[in-house]
Length: 235
Length: 336
Image 1 (cartoon, each protein chain N blue to C red):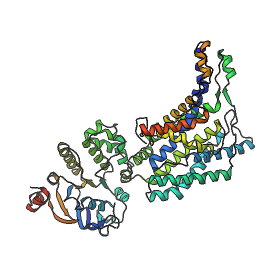
Image 2: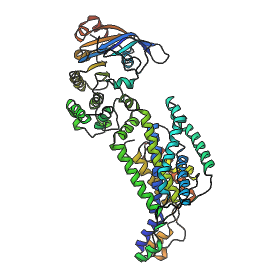
Image 3: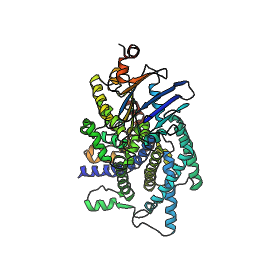
Image 4: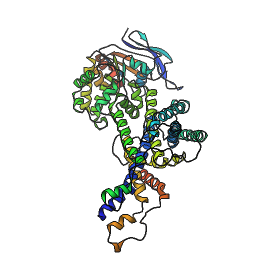
């Protein structure tokens, strides 16, 4: 039993066809799990299904031994799951500090201590404290997005392509930050396009193809698997 | 001396009235902009909602007067503001629950919302017609003037005087207080920040645990407070004619758009921009110029650019020009 499990999930958008079918993903605290696969494989959909943004046709989602399949996304957020969407993942018109305050909206204690912790994790945010987030660089914004998601002290953090659209240098920096977050005993599930780099920091990975689990294994195993390399890593 | 007289003329006939009228427009424009920022539609019922709130102030003022209650030198109507606000908010939340929330859940497009608000406007007008009727009513009592022109002339020895009506001073002072409190609330409190967050990025606000129902409710409450106060101040200053508020929607929308729709501070300044433009363009400058130029050059005509009947044309032109040239509004700054 893993801490956070999606078991044999089948789901699609509205009345449309199933995007994922019988897809299983799980993660433990203090572990980074990468979801990889070609375009349209259902990576983001699998994540959204685990967050409750779309309804499961079959299968279930379990958090810490409790079946949360019928809980709303808001209730799952309250239950300790945090999500960083791929786009529009910050409040662009608010300051850095206000973004963090909203991230901690449901907290009723230690808000300032938590903001301080986030500043220690992402020192650049302390400097930009009162700046409007819309004026920050792409990499800094992603840090704000991570910081906002961490303010609720989640046990599970889900990241949808955290490095989309940032330069390779910033990407490395962001991955370092994600590893630091993992070390605070958070279960991290991320969807990534940059498969090689993602696997190099991940404990485990799943490769999805047409909505189904195709390969799974530790980061190293997947990186060295000849078939995975040939089909997805381009080498 | 003549130069001073010219300034006094300008102050008395343009600047003081424009500050008053601008304050009234500003309160309406902030209402429009708040509803737009949070609920994402242009509320065509704005004018009649302001009229609706004012109606209760008028009725309660008459009641209090009949019981012999007064507020000393201040208008009795000021005592009725809390009651009028309460009735207004009650009405708006009722409308929201039975009309707007249905379209919100369906995620209807903004145009549909705007059409729905036109329906609300007609219903509101009908209710006002039933309750109080369409006639003109004055409900101002207390001391009418703070400073009369004759007193000012005696005091200064100038040939021109300044008249400061109590309603003008009350309007400007109350507007500044109310608007300051609103900006403090929006920028410094947790609830205000959550409103701005919801306006900026609704999906992420939901993922952060912000309750959309609460945000919508608080928006109606704040907007209701502003609109009621704006409506009462306008009614005290002019008189309460229920359907004049509908006409005021043009300058109010112009103010909101000049300020960048969705931007409350822009809407606040926009109110004054529109008021000053309307009054400066329709004022007859004959007297002002006569003081400034040698007697031989004194103008014969009124020197009035536009007849006051055309004051709405001024708002309308500004509205069109801003939409053509700077649709995002002339003031830089964040939306809600």
